[in-house]
Length: 305
Image (cartoon, rainbow, N blue to C red; front, side):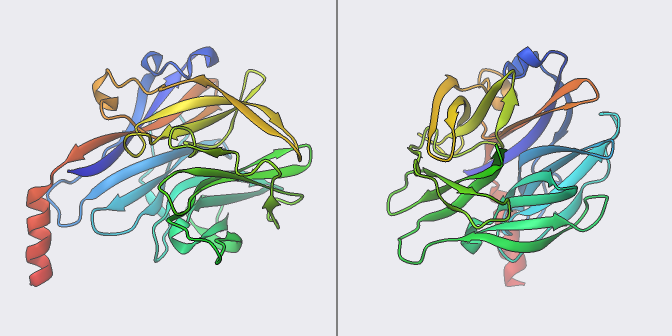
């Protein structure tokens, strides 16, 4: 069975309801396996991030073919009804995902997941349309003196009191998600380990499922549950202490993606939210599984030809 992902956006009138997925109204979606009959179909559209810029809501997401690494896509809207044609905004020789986009000092940046490169990379938008991004620098590179099974997954930065906190996930010799925290005086670094790092070693909450959320006076972190399978659901934790010397959090809500409805039957691993023109918009993804026997046979035939 092949693991596939799809995306949907939900609209909420009330901020209190954003974690109650069943109360949301679907306004947009991106399906996988469209079109189906291809030698290299798109099996993953995932990691949706929302970003408002110059009156438009932008949706950035990962798009991965069955036999090719992920690229980063974007579509936008001014009215939550009409969406632009998706375009590729970033492509590299290695796999890309988790396109977290943010604004700093009047410029728009992206920190995607670039773990296959063994680094955390900072990109800057090269056009006002946010349709292309160029590399600025590598913020961090994996240590050479440690065994790394999986490097720098789902990284993001949060600014508080003039300090920048960078959170990222690694796996060392064991398949356990280790959530590490770094700190810097500048968002472009250099970053040094936080005294509390690593803050979590857990497949339940040790990998972020989106950027940190400021919600009703609380600072929240969403995490993906990989206890049984990769990205089975999303939990919400409150960060109760965050300073240059301390970090503490506590779980508030578990498994917010309702697996008793068809769209989330197999779970999912991403949650992001934004207020756009008076509406609370939530972006999530969800898993599904397919055998794709015909597709794999077609690919083998084309490869031989």
